[in-house]
Image 1 (cartoon, helix red, strand yellow):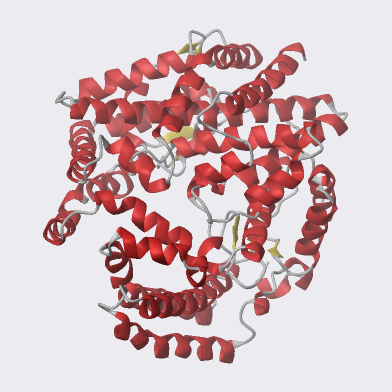
Image 2 (cartoon, rainbow, N blue to C red):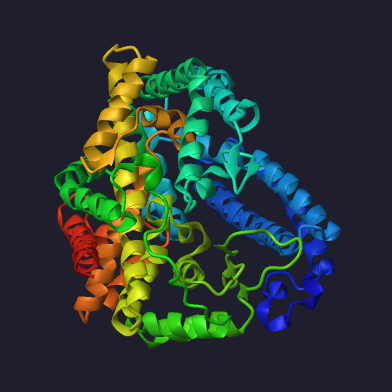
Amino acid sequence: MKRSEVQEKYKWHLTDLVESDEAFEKSFTEVLSLLDGFKQYEGKLGEKESALACLKLGSKVDCLVETLYVYAHMRMHGDMSESVAVGYANRTEALAAKVMTAESFISSELGALSEKIIDSYIADPEFSDYSFSLSEIKRQKAHILSEKEERLLAMSAEALSATDNISSMLMNADLKFKPIKKDGKNVELTNESYGALVSDEDRKVRKAAFNNLYDGYIAHINTLTASYAGNVKSDNFHAVARGYKDCLEMAMESEGVPTAVYENLIAAVERNLEPLHRYIALRKKMLGLKELHMYDLHVPVVENAQMKLSYEEACEMVKSALAPMGKEYVALLDKSMKEGWIDVMPNDGKRGGAYSWGAYGTHPYVLLNYAPTTSDIFTIAHELGHCMHTYYSNTTQPFDKAGYRIFVAEVASTCNETLLEKYLMDTVKDKNIQRYLLSYRLDRFRTTLFRQAMFAEFEYEAHKMDLEGKPLTVDALNGLYYDLNKKYYGPSVVSDDKIAYEWSRIPHFYNAFYVYKYSTGITAATSIAHNILTRGDYVDIYKNKFLCAGGSKKPYEILCDAEVDLATDKPYDDAFAFFAEALDKLESM
C-alpha cells in the first residue's frame, strides 16, 4: 500500500511539529544565524552573566535543532522514498554536527571552574533550569584530568576504539555462514535471520541454524578474542587513568547509579535461579523433547494464540488495561490515539518496527506497523508507555531537565506491558491464550531479566580477570561463559559445547556494563506495576515522582523517590514473585 492510500486517521500529524516547508526553512536559517553567538562567551563562563546567557542560548538552539531533526527523520520514516524528507534528514544531521562544534567548549570550560563558582551557580535561582547539569559537572570533576592529560586521552580515543570497529566489521561484513535447508530449499543464514530460524517449528532447522552460526564464529574466534580482550583492556585503562577503582565504577558513576545496584542485581538473580530451572524443565515437557538443547529455547511453546483485533479494538483494550493509571492518563491515551500522535499502518517505504519519539514543546509521537496479533497489542501499550513518560516529563520540566536517562527509559513502557498482561489474564477466557500470555511473561523474564544478568556477570568477571593480570584467552573466556550458561539454565537443558562461544557474538559487550539496564528495567517496572495494582495511593507517587521527573535528578534517585530502590531486595522480590506466579499457573494448566 502506498502512503497516499493510508487513511488520514492512521497517520501522525507532523504539522504539530513544523507547520510547513517554509517554516522548516525559517527555523533552519534561524539556527545558523544563532551559532556565531556562542563565540562571545568562550573563556568567560566564570562570569555569571556570560555563563547564564550562554546556557540560555544553548537551550534555545538545542530546542530548535531537536524539533527540526525529529520532524525531518519522522517524516522520512513515514516513506523512505520521499526525496524531500531524505534531504531534510541529511541537512539536520549536518546542522546538529555544527551545533555540537559551536557548543563544544561549554562543558569543558564549566568543568574547569572552581567548585566555589559552580556551587554559586547551582544556588542561584536564575540557574534553576541548569542546576542538575551543573551538579553533574561538579560531581565528575574529580575524574577530569589536567588539560595535557585530557588531550592525550582524546588523541588516543580513535586508536583505542579500533577493537569495536574490527569486531563490527567482522560480524557484519566478513563473517559468512553455511546456508540452512528449509522445506527442501537453501535459506541464507545471517546474524539478522538467525533469530527467526532458531525459532522455527522444525527442529532440524533450529539445530542447523545454531550449528552453522557458531561454526562461523568459531572459524574466527582468535580474532574475536583478541578484539574483545583489547576492548576490555581499553575500558580498564580509561578507568584507571581517570582514578576509578575499576571500569564498573566508571560506567555506573557516569550514569549516576551506585555500583551496589549492579552487585545486587547479580546476587538477587543468583538467589532466584531455581524458578528459571523449573521453567526450562517445563519447556522441555511442553515441547515433548527427550533432550532440550540451547537451540530449543526460542521456539514458542504455545501455538495458535493470536488475538486478531482491529487497531481500534486493540486501542480500547489497552485503555481498559491501563485504567488503574487513572482518568487523566487514560484521557491522554485516548487523545494520542485520536489526534494524530500515532502513525499506525505499514505502507510502502515506511520504516519497520516501532518507536516513540518527539521534540520538546509539542506532544510526543509513536510509530507503529500494526498487524492484528497479540504481540502488536503489547507493542501499542509499550510505545505509549514511552510516549506518556515523555509527555509528563516535557510538560513538567524545563527543556534542560526533561530528558530522562537510559537507566529508566524502559521502565514506563514495560510497566504498561505488565498491566496489560495482568488485565488480559483476568479477562480473557480462552485457555490457550491464557497459556500463551503466561509463556510470554516467562520468556520475557528469561530473556530480559535472567539472560541479561548472565551477560552482566560475564562482563564483570572478564574485566576483573584483566585487572588481576589474567590473560583473556579463548579458553578462559569460553570457560567463563560456559560455566555461567550451565549455572543459569540448569540441568534440564543440554549446554551444547558451541554455546561457550556465544559471548563472541554479543555486540553490546563492546559498550561495557550496559546490558544490566535491561534487567533492572524490567525489575523496576514489575515492582511499580505491583504497587499500582495493590496500593491506592501509589499512582500519584508514580506520576509525580517518576513520570514527571524527567532528567531532573540522577535516575537511581528518581526510582528511589518512586519507592523502588534497586540496591535492596524488594523490587526483586516483587519481580520474582510475578515470574513464579506465571510458572505455577502454567504448570497447573
